[in-house]
Amino acid sequence: MTPLSQIAWDDTVLPFQLDRSDVRGRIARLDGVLEDVLRQHDYPAIVEGLVAEIALLTALIGQTMKLRWKLSLQVRGKGPIRILATDYYAPTEEGASGRIRAWASFDPERLDESADAFSQIGEGYLAVLIDQGEGMLPYQAMTPLAGGSLSACAETYFAQSEQLPTRFQLAYGRSTEAGQAERWRAGGVMLQMMPSSPIAAREGSGEGGLLRHADILAGAEDENWTRANVLLDTVETMELIGPSVGLTNLLVRLFNEEVPRVYDPTPVRFGCTCSEDRVRTSLSIYSARDIRHMTTADNTVTADCQFCGAHYVFDPLTLGFEAQKNADGSPKEAADG
Image 1 (cartoon, helix red, strand yellow):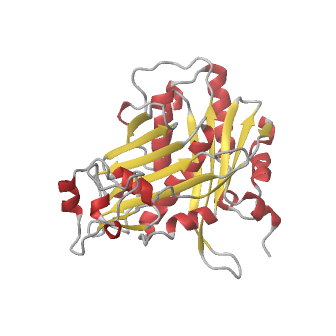
Image 2 (cartoon, one colour; image 1 turned 90 degrees about the horizontal axis):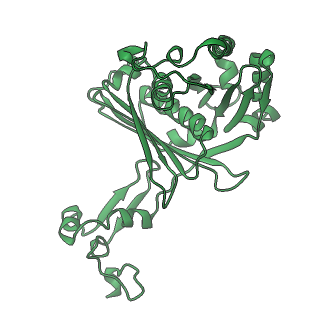
């Protein structure tokens, strides 16, 4: 039998605020959604760990933003692990789930599975992209990879681009419970200070001159931020991952003196938006000549979704801006005419 606390808090992001220190935050636990993300692929363990980390970061960050449609995190490096990419789709209505998908690209011949995972990305950057939907200009910001972890890179992004001191405490890995198969679990806490008058520092005290919280906060705000972080440092891995400790119980255990207040939680699930129509639209910019170069020996054009593994097969005559169409504008398949 599954404990009620586990049913209530798996695959959930819970917003909270610490009234005494004026710090806001999110606490998340991913279970089934992480399994769904990773089962789409056959990654080595070192790659799976990074995908789990960036998926957890995406769930925490996506829930903090006034997001109408999609948040994307992309890590690109020159090492054996070349790309890590995630999307978080905001709930379409109150009470609905947020949706997460993720994938990675890597060079298996160069990958050192005994090395530190972050080192296998090499020199590169973290890009944060916010797409609010049709009619809205997308936002994009990038920060160099530094600090030894993806969570440290995300903290740097908020300090550099938003002047918001931010802290992540994450835990993830394969977990085995009595009588159950081994599976991935992840949990994490995000803290964020809302400074009333951020200090505009030209150069930070972090790696390579990047900004840190100490370059943004001063006085009482700095004291409040430090106190909240000291309390967060006491969290244990199994408290983050669960499943025996509920998220609200963990908040009280960590931050009782800071007067925590919780808001409505958001459930999250795996979700991919790929479809035949979307792939067809993405190919609509190509000429008939370009489409012929994509055509296979059996006279089809194929496409695979890197997020969910869906496989699409098209008649080349129905693709591109010179495609043959029926009177109603729909693709004219070879069998039609």
